[in-house]
Length: 574
Picture 1 (cartoon, rainbow, N blue to C red):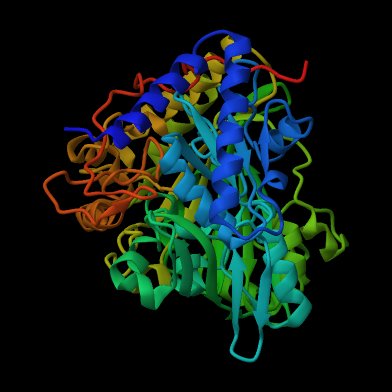
Picture 2 (picture 1 turned 30 degrees about the vertical axis):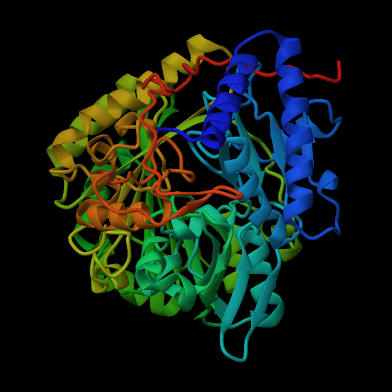
């Protein structure tokens, strides 16, 4: 039975929902109303300076659209019909985050947590019910301590900023994370971020020594305060399922003065099939200092469709030692000295981020992407080499389908040494490589969306015989609503996709989620679910305390992708 106070919260949710789905003017009124409520609430629960009014944007604010769109990295979710947040909260200090969490419960509106916006299915900044965005881009301080080889990194910092700040202090240190310089640290690290040094040092989370998180009750907790269960969960389980990550303390890793990169491309007429097959046999077993990614793309050569295989590498050493390793373990590629480029580690970061040779490291501080496409990504894991016949069949299907490409990322090395239960990220020993399915397009409209989404889904289906099974594994940071979503936060519903992302770690994650956020304040359509039979921690609602269970309202239609039913909120200043 609901109390009067809890009933008022549900009444406000109903009112917001009515306004959200009704006329443009009513939607603007909803935004203004929520804005006023939030300003008052934030002011009473955060430091007075800077004022709360300076960090909250509604549709009437002239900067609203700029703030919203600055960190949308997928044009599929930046259209006139895309649902928009009623307000955007942009914390400047940690107390703003604490207050935003408390106020979100008081208002009863869904909260989306965004750091860099590289969320392939837009789950950090769209919803089909009334919502607001907690946008962390202002919280991007980085404190590098070379003395103890650590750094504190706030969640709103980008990977490019992190790499640059490390390079400022030391030319012999780095960090194993992704190649996209505009990717936000917050989601990347907590989901199990990886990069070109994963065979040497593992994932980003494998170098995580501490963290600061704001829990459902607005408390800031470090590793000691949160305990080892929650610290385990945010290392690969996705931090947004459990709270708001403020910062990570990471362990820096050693990099040599000289590293070497190469890119060798071959088409089917140039023996690409044999090379990809042989790559599978050595990719996870070769020297741990060597990472060789394979990009596979349908292309046209001399008016004929074919597959181009690009072997792109980072080697933590000089070219002479690289050539020795390749001659011994992968001679079929025929790598030559002229294929190799020696450089510093920071220059290799720029190389992998597709900057021109000679670009200044200052470019890593640019938080703006040069271009933003419509895109879709999916993932798989391969545990047994695909035969040459299988590869040739794949090539035919890729050419038949059209534009979708594949990226093979090798595992092995340090990845095989860390137990699958050491962190929440389970995909360790036994996986030869991870596949990323990738399709980008620039054409606007529903027909183009449907065409390219169908292409990538067809290829994913065709790959079923070649990838992991029972369950078919997926990588959390390549969020993919196709493999399952939650409508009710139930255990059974969450396990459909949760077992694919987390394998045998799923049940432990559910226990942590239920203990720390049993009411489901945090999360997205693919978050860790809760177990209603478990006892949840008390959830405080500004003056009240409830032992809450998750909502059972069917608040999503299941198709989600490009089929969100709620209208875009108009520009209220027009």
